[in-house]
Length: 329
Image 1 (tube, one colour):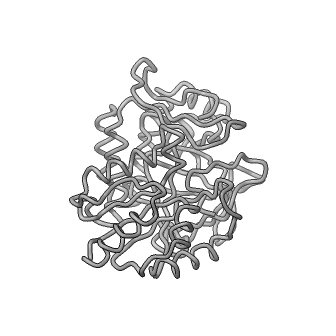
Image 2: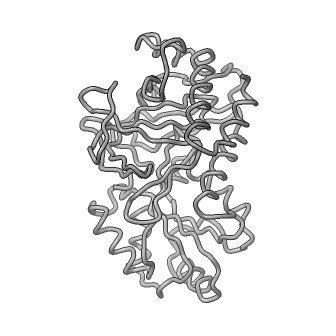
């Protein structure tokens, strides 16, 4: 099956059977076309001949994106790249891209599965550190959302709190559906400034104190934001520069994946085994939209999976480098 046929399969998944069949086809494609992934699979003793389930498929450590060109295409075709947030003391991951429209298709599909048409919302973005770092997949996604929005107030806002507060309050008073994306410290700055209770608003907290404020546990943070902004729940998005798809939490830090994405929880001490039943382990992500890089990634995040395909983020694996992108904790 060629790349174009695979893309059609990925975005027409309707059930578990479709997902498993498509995942196996993507695995074969990447085993054949991705040099780094092929070498990793062979080291793990896995080939298309002895992989029979999702759990059999090898997952590459996410750190490979810091040191290797994880691509399933000719590197001469690279047109874009995204990089993870980090500090000058840490090496950042790079997701190399040959077809940016595939990312646009994936994040559009992910968002609209949970929230409906993008153009129906006014998008307000408070993401100063992501803009400063450059090559942010989150900024690219939200910029695309802003361009599709029917509302002129959609845009990236900086630290002019009076202007931002007035914009939010005006939209709220006119019952404009608002999606507010913000890094943690900027949302807390907005709460401290003082703002009338917002109506018809979804608030996404994307993580990140960046040394601006004292770290706060998620439950306490979300309570402060809910009370300060007048919304019942705080939403979250689980994504990273190494992925083309995003999982979403509408409340309480409980995430669900779009149809092209799935999370498995691996045993920390035995990475080739998986845990079930409300047990904490390492998060393995299958992102079938990652056709051009690698769809099977072992992250440095800890989580729990539940029987209804939901999962939670419980923190980071010890000794892994903390990245800023959507840690959410």
